[in-house]
Image: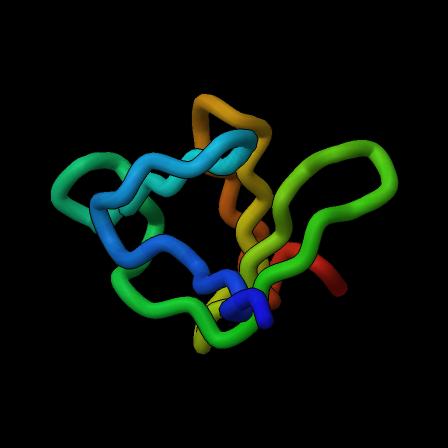
Length: 69
């Protein structure tokens, strides 16, 4: 009987996945994200308490609720 595979723990290299952390101190728009999804065009969209943020792989673009109306 084979043992079930386990997901690698933090700091363990895994193929195909990259983990990064961005905070306000290193260029992120906020320190807390409520929801995250990837759109059809590949951008990552993050919902925060005050804005919707798009990440295109290098930089963040914040879309404040006042600008979306």
